Image 1 (cartoon, rainbow, N blue to C red):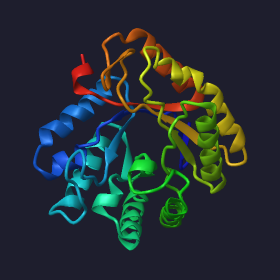
Image 2 (image 1 turned 90 degrees about the vertical axis):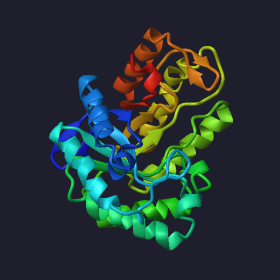
Image 3 (image 1 turned 135 degrees about the vertical axis):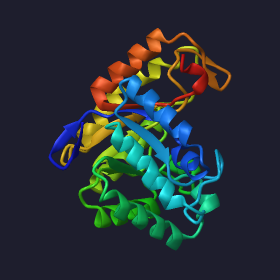
Length: 272
């Protein structure tokens, strides 16, 4: 669970990466549609990108950026939803200068400290978004900067890759331990994207790793959120999962109960 102020809650999330982009470009109906979808499915927070280039073009220098931010947060607040704001995506493309990253993280910290329904992830999948790893010293510094400017706002740093081998898993745990030792209140993890007909079971297979993370960080007891990268269906076909949902949903919810929180990566074709 996550503690925000005096309240504790269990995070059950859904990716809605485009919401600020939709609001900034005038597609208010899609903002309402995705937030209503979240509410209808028992979701209590949505995961939103604050800046990106690869999926769509969103940058804080754009006209009406912060107006769009305020609109999205207001719409979520009206529905009783939280927002996990992922500050940096494609940082190597849109914000390669360190000082610009610091300014942007500070701006978001100052905004979020006034938003009781907001929390942050500093960087999405650090290893491919401008940092060497989730425990890159430059990223750890950004976490410290965020905490200094929003000391009561929950945040995570980034998500190490879930290992496909024992050595990979050991490195993932090492990164998580380093992040937790820094005082980060939330840890996140992306399950493996390995091609495997039984791929869904890796969420269950890595429960021990999740428990190991919590044990390594037992002094500050961080929350742990499992970020599912490629959809909720149970069988992978090509680069997405197929439509056999029952086992995958069961595994996902079981892991959510065990580790504390999950994010359903929404793929519109799977809405039905």
